[in-house]
Length: 379
Image 1 (cartoon, one colour):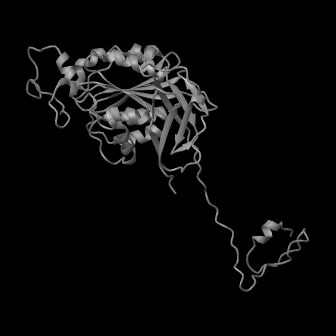
Image 2 (cartoon, one colour):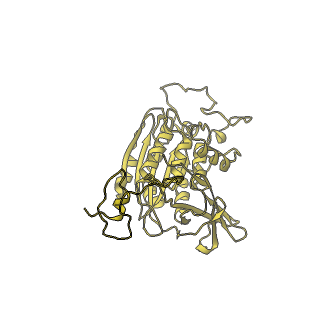
Image 3 (cartoon, rainbow, N blue to C red):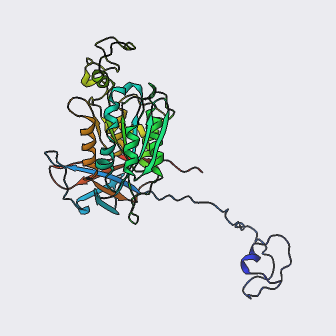
């Protein structure tokens, strides 16, 4: 029998070997020498390698608040955990959008439903744009996929126009989790692929009741999937004030002249602070804390927090901002912001990664996502 060198070295035990075809190989079993450690072939192991593509939307405004459209890739410096990165994809407002609309349909905001039902054309024309695709998720006590991703604008507008009032529940975080899951399956923009920017637009109160998902967990997944969250804050107080008086019907759940949501600590309840306005909280720090502590419950500022954690924006619809105006503002920003992509190098793979985007010009304000969290792979 003729054996190759590799096979013969793997044979163990007192076997009589035939003469090898190659004269340089030993003619027989190798006898261990006294005092010499026998080398054993290492066990086969599986090395898990992950290549993470980070897409971050960047909004740049001048001192007057106007968006800046004249920058080039060389004007930006982006770091990941303090290590400068190489920008592999750069675009100004032109990449197609995958838009997941997450809309509250609970009875709490029923008086606002006529306005919400009219927003379909704004979603398709102003927000998603002519090259975009749109999906719709509705939620109250249940979470329902009302429309899968489509480029059919008539289907989007028809689905929005037929939204029905549901129960009084609000599984906001579960609905957002479904939106992230749907967006994660869409083709993504990269250095070599013409994909889509992943955007979730939430129209709801900043109130969750009964969700299984935690907000921090949803935001962690959104960051890893490069999902940017924009939110249009609805107000049950505004809905109540806009509701036409009824001669008969159910009584208010709270006394006349009071409000359904508690005010910030140390403040007097007014329509302008009924859960729809920022109250001076450091949202950036809270966003970082939320994705690092996914098991903890976030009880306030949910929509502002989601937008801050992913590089989007939160627009409350109280005072002089209508739902339509908020959607116009969001659409204008989406189609005039920069998209930067990079593959992280020179930094530890796991744990929280802080992103910093800087433009080397005076009097410019830069807004981008603060970072992302990488979960260690299972062994």
